[in-house]
Image 1 (cartoon, rainbow, N blue to C red):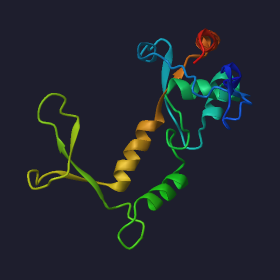
Image 2: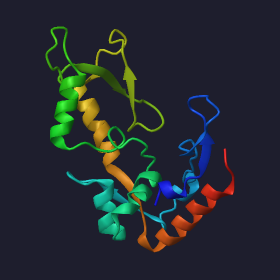
Image 3: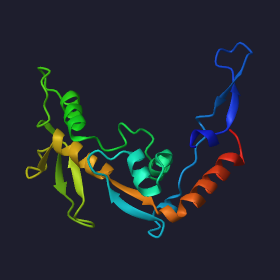
Length: 180
């Protein structure tokens, strides 16, 4: 469904004057920020271990093919880095990404340091690299940094099923308006 609505264009990738009809993958539409914050249209959901955009779309909308709605409304362009990982995948990822000078996994290595913000929103933390000015800074490990990122990715918005048909119609209208 998602790709079928994307316009086709002629493209001559070999520059041999024999263009082929291809899907215009540069054609995109997005959900307006104002729409995303409308609590009447969306529910907050915490992605659970094993959840995929397809499984969520099936549970909520009764159709795995509507996984693109889950991804589009949450700005997920890359399901491998923009979607929360399974625990085993996550552990493998951080063990490969963070290694010490000997090439050994180092998830407990220092990623950065944080201090509490002293004015304004004091729940926000400020990243610092120079400890000489901030001796009381909190050490954040590679594991803690990546785990926080995964926790942020778990919090998604799901379009209320009663608006799916209207959402699809609007998406199709936007895709058909003009070509690049």
